Amino acid sequence: MRGVSGTRFDMSDEATAEQAYSAAALAIHQGKLVVFPTDTLYGVAADAFSPAAIADLLAAKGRGREMPPPVLVSTAETLEALTSEVPAWAHALVEEFWPGPLTLVCREQASLTWDLGETAGTVAVRMPDNEIALTLLKRTGPLAVSSANLTGMPAATTADQASDMLLERVAVLLDGGSTAGEVASTIVDCTREGAWILREGVIEADEIRRVVLAAGGHWHADEAVEDEGSTEVVADA
Image (cartoon, rainbow, N blue to C red; front, side, top):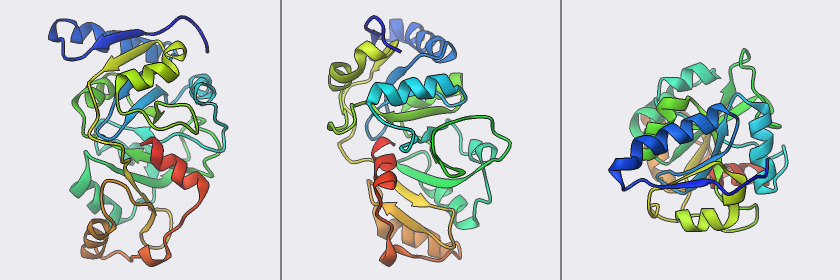
């Protein structure tokens, strides 16, 4: 999807905030792309249940289906609707760190009719701690969200950076000022026996370990998984 430059809204202007959220939600409903801030980085979002919108998102970033985007949600309860076989220690992590910079890779619900890319039956889910992101997510439902940058370029932490790379590919950009920093979320694989950190981000491994062990889970940080796909997913969320 390539077209005219997207509409940019200053989210510090209360007079136009409602117009901004309505425009962004409508764009998502129409299968278009939207950029907004999270508590880590700026993200470019698409309707998680629209294969065409997901394809546009991947194309806008210059990325293939082998790097599927994470899904952002507005409530912790949504995790149950999107995933299955979530261990008790993962629920403990959700209680401790959501909303916040923690992404969980879980087995997806088999009944879901979506196509995020080559996911091998899994989905990366996160609830961001950002008012703009959560307000939009409550209106749209789950969104597939990738970092708002071209693949291989630094992730955007300001609306200007996101605009320079993606504005011509998106319908709406919500400018919420600078994000907290350049560090992405920590991602934990919940599909194996015990907790595996795929990449350490804002939340340190020791904090993850503390919660997992307290909940009776197993810890495999000393054998942390490092692979290209997992690292790319974390950088998005």
